[in-house]
Length: 381
Image (cartoon, rainbow, N blue to C red; front, side):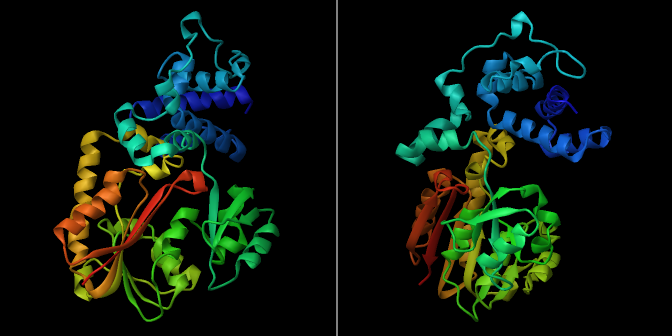
């Protein structure tokens, strides 16, 4: 496909997304219907689509409309590539006079939902502008070196043998940032053999901060795909259980655990195995810290949905507090940048449960390289 044809394909996909289809579904359907598109073409179209979603507000202003064509035209204008709208071959038609667009306003250049800006500004303080700008760009690709099977240097060497360039990242001692050939990772021997796992560096740092020692009974209460479960298993010999309200999210976890060389038990009723020495709650949240990876999330979040997720977080904390042994630990984490989901949620919990105390907490932002994350370590009486 020519560069212009890739733009036209991205326009088609974005129109489906704006009509309500999830981006991954729209991309998959386009790929199935476009057998002529090679792997490089599909990757390029995907990149255009996600860049447009990250910069939806500013691109729509520059391109003259909140449509697939307007978003892609706006991206091209900002990159000095408007000439790709030539109408030649399969390229999009040249811009019409009514598509002149305009300079984005200061608010549009943030590429954030207007209603959420005050909360984010208050939560991030002096870092607000820099974080907003970081969220407009792609996230780095990170791997976790599985120290049960190799060390960081060994993982770097194994990846390099297959043309994948990775370097240690300071956020976590297991973190590797991939700078070349990231799309080869999942077919690489290092990945298939369990030497490395895809995991954000901030997520790894959260696990690295947990007070894990051999012999502990640990529950990953909101395990999802199990990234943190596996990272905990690699840190210490644990009796490790994983739970998620949607059991299907954990469908791949047994195979991933086998590949990683660890043992994890899945449970639908975590109370049955209580008490635990440590419970990790990686709670459902706004996802604002990971909007570089999931830019759809920031445009689909509503005030009502945020209120609901905050209520859900509180209910989960109240539930799991009963599962922690006396003197045990509760680790509360979110991939959110919002104070009401982070320190605000912890303070509300402590008010409801005066026997608990906050040992320490830490907030990560994209300015440190990884996703935005928050971790609070709580101890019961």
